Image 1 (cartoon, helix red, strand yellow):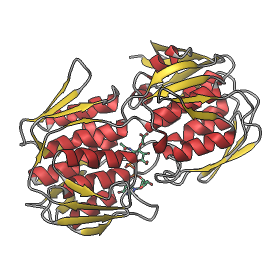
Image 2 (tube, rainbow, N blue to C red):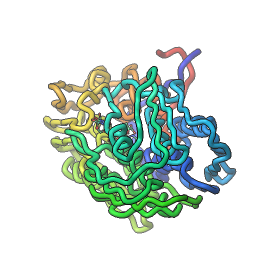
Image 3 (tube, rainbow, N blue to C red):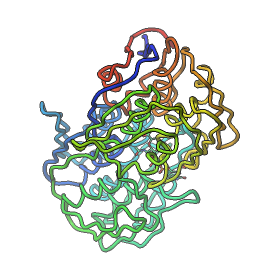
Length: 427
Ligand code: EPU
């Protein structure tokens, strides 16, 4: 079977307006939280990406009815609570499946989730998720590659959630989802502050939970007996916003983003400003990004929110390839998340990796080439490089990109980008 690939002819300036979709990384844990609720949940702005489809498939197996309405809303209803097992065939496709662990354990008193393996961006252990479940009173063991967790009723606890590197996003989501139905009060210290965690807490509160402090490193949760359904709109995808901001800058274009939140992208916009890219709120409430001048080199280090997001590291690096001087990019969240480096070098970039750091020597131009996508954000960086490159770029294995970008090629085409999705054997 041929795999889909993109053919991109670089050099056009992107111009126009584009609407940002809802955030994949907010939608996934919120969808998993449906396991906790009695009654119907209606979610707006759930992006049309393959990770959402994978999680829907898992939820259906777990007895949740998942329906996409004609207006795009997603309706979720739990019909059957018998199955508590997330099997390897889905977990290995999508690590975020781990976020059914907390809800299954809290609501059904038992969870069996296949242990996620390694992935392209590094080891990605789940030890902190498991430690938190144990602290809430669960028995947790590893049986033939599956995490098996059991508890009659979880008990609230004051606990430290962090690891040596900082906080964990999905670990915080899992713990929050488990603690909402626990008996008593839980205090989560060194909780992740990412906007996706705030959105999950807002969703759970609408369903009747009692969570406060979300958005800070100290979240307090008063356990309750039952959650009901609710209607909720998922926050805009800050990573899609940032990616399209780079598309404007790298193509010397001007793009207005609708449904984008600058307060979720402060560190990123700060780096864009230092590079010389204009980012302004437009009168109609959108955000306009433009670039016409030479790009300044900058240094950037990825950090937990509100620091610079690891999920935009590859895309910013594509832009820095064309800056007038040397930049330094340091990855503090996933030190091995540099699969794009060798591929960008195939396009004429001058990148040198030294441990968790890449030295980017700016070049005058990138040149189109066949390249291989390896993970979601690395793929986006290669597409961005292709938009700026002289000649034709073929980005292979775009199924990685389809996991997390909602109609990315369509949106770029609507802005004037010369990008075509093709089916074939370019592998
Ligand atoms: N970590 C541990 N033990 C754990 C959990 C995490 O050591 O039990 C380490 C990780 O290895 C990493 C650091 O903690 O070094 C942070 O990882 P985190 O747990 O925060 O990552 P995650 O929750 O698994 C989410 C996003 C990722 C995003 C990271 C960091 C989802 C579905 N995934 O992953 O998104 O890069 O937070 O912001 O929300 C993407 O969308 O492309 C993506 C990879």
